[in-house]
Amino acid sequence: MIDFYPSYFEKFKCIADKCPDSCCKGWDVVVDDKSAEIYRSIGGFGEKITASMTIDNDGDCVFVNKNGRCPFWGKNGLCEIYIKLGEKYLCKTCRQFPRLEQQYDRFTEHLLSFACPEAARLMLDSENAYDNFVCASDSELIEKSSNFIRLLLIARSTTVSFLKDKKLDFFDRLKLCLGYNKAVQAFIDKETDAVEFKPESVLISPSERHSCNAVFRLHRELEIMSEEWKTVLEKAEKTDFANPSPILSDMLERLGLYYIYRYYLTSLDSRNVLITIKRLVCACIVLSRALNVWEKSPAELFCLYSKEVEHSYENSEAMELEFLTSPDFSADTLVECLDTQFGQKSSYK
Image (cartoon, rainbow, N blue to C red; front, side, top):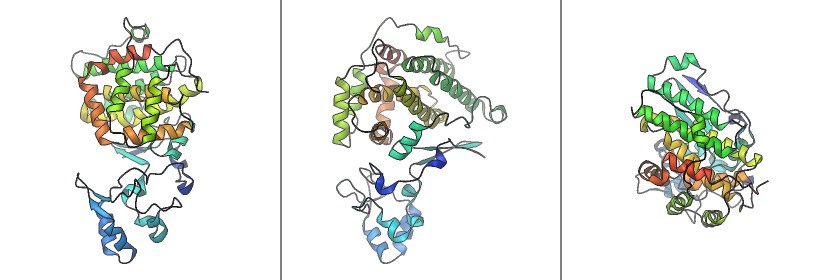
């Protein structure tokens, strides 16, 4: 088994009470069976922990949320379990977050989640973070893999190359990602005998243009946890669409790389590579507008989006259903949506 880490991974350290947000806020903390058993076995403070656990509607053991806060999140922003018992007594969720581990047949990829402000800051500040990840040039690893994962690894590397092509405007890069993966999907679905894609065919302005109303409509219909996100979303929808500045393009590119490395290989199960690209396109459309009305750091906005949309199973499932069934989210329609971007410059500096 080979492990792959982005360059920012080892730099991460929880900033605890200095964090502008908290992973203890707004979420139910799932307690793994081993930790729950340990909490029940210790006296004293362990009894308080046990009394704060319950079983939710999904059958998971969770800490009872009190006014949107974990019951052990102190007023000083620090964890009471960590302070009184030590790090080894944290449940698996709290011990690992925001670290993500994705295991495949012959390798494991490690990432951080954008739902943590400090992780988001590191990811937005890091160049070439995934250069050491498995790619199409890793011939030995690819040759030992199954035919389907070999296809996905090669397709992922090609998608990354389009996303990182700084000679193009960022939304042109997204159009290439959509067009190429439409061709990959046709091959997976056995509609074609080869992955046939001509980049110039996607970069030509489409015959029709579509507003992004459907993208914002979808986000409005998702479960919204915070008033802050509801307000930002409403304001963002009313702003002008704009071609992003170089600084914003770099941030969206790094967000895009995160999405591709986190989600692209999930098509091993779904057999649909376009879902990842559609998720990314929708995120970039919403965030590129939201940054024009956002008054805090970009990392905090990316974190808010991740918590509200990406880390909700219900919201992820709702989005994927739309991507699979609605003509508003076909690859061609999203290319037409992206084309409405051009001719304006982003006001974000």
